[in-house]
Image 1 (spheres, rainbow, N blue to C red):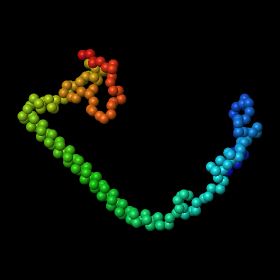
Image 2: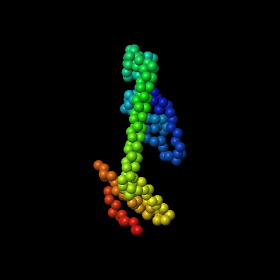
Image 3: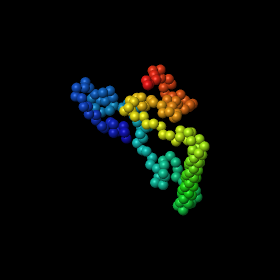
Length: 179
C-alpha cells in the first residue's frame, strides 16, 4: 500500500538550480525501489491487515465473554463504592482531628512552659521571647544585610549535615564581610 503510494507520488523540488534528481529517484521524480526495499515495505506495511472481529477489544488479546461477570464479582456496585469513599473520608477527618488536637496540646504545653519560665527566670524568658532587631539594607547595605548574623539565631552559613555533599564543596574566594 505504502510502496504503491510512494511509486505513484511525484517529488517536487523547490530548488531549480539542482543538478538532477537525488539518488533513488528516476528522471521523472518517481521513487526507484529495488527488491529488498520492496520486501521490507511489504513486511512493515502489509497490504491486507487482518481486522479484529467486532466483539474483540484488542487485536492481540482474545475476547473473553466472562469478563463482565468477573468485574461484577470484584466490584459489586456503586453503593459499595460510595460506602468505601465515605469510610475513607471519615478516616481522613479523624486523622486531621487527631493532628489538630496534637498541635493544640503542643501549643498549650509551650505556653505553660513559657509562663513557668517567666515566673522563675525572667531574664531567660526575655531572651526567649525577644524579637531579633530588623536589619535595614538601606542603613548597612544590601550585601552586608544579607550576611549579617542575627544574635541568638542559628548562623545562616552553616548547613545541616547530609549524606551527600553540597554542589560547591568549598568557596576558596570567600572573605569575611568588613564591619
